[in-house]
Image (cartoon, rainbow, N blue to C red):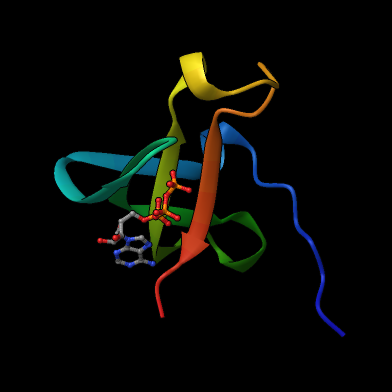
Length: 68
Ligand SMILES: Nc1ncnc2c1ncn2[C@@H]1O[C@H](COP(=O)(O)OP(=O)(O)OP(=O)(O)O)[C@@H](O)[C@H]1O
């Protein structure tokens, strides 16, 4: 069964120099997810930074995708 995991902003490193693409609601950047449960191992991910002007919920700013 899949699980939804809440990732804190300080667990993400966004590489703003490596933009992977862009959607209507924001840009997607390469980044790292810091696995605090696994000796701070850094896992490569794609991070979507939601454009606040198109976002109804001000609490949601970043969405983390695992790179396939
Ligand atoms: N996991 C990923 N790995 C690599 N590139 C990605 C990944 N996810 C998204 N991208 C890149 O970012 C672009 C935008 O992805 P996104 O998921 O935001 O698209 P979208 O669903 O059209 O966006 P929106 O819902 O904002 O309109 C993709 O076309 C792709 O180039």
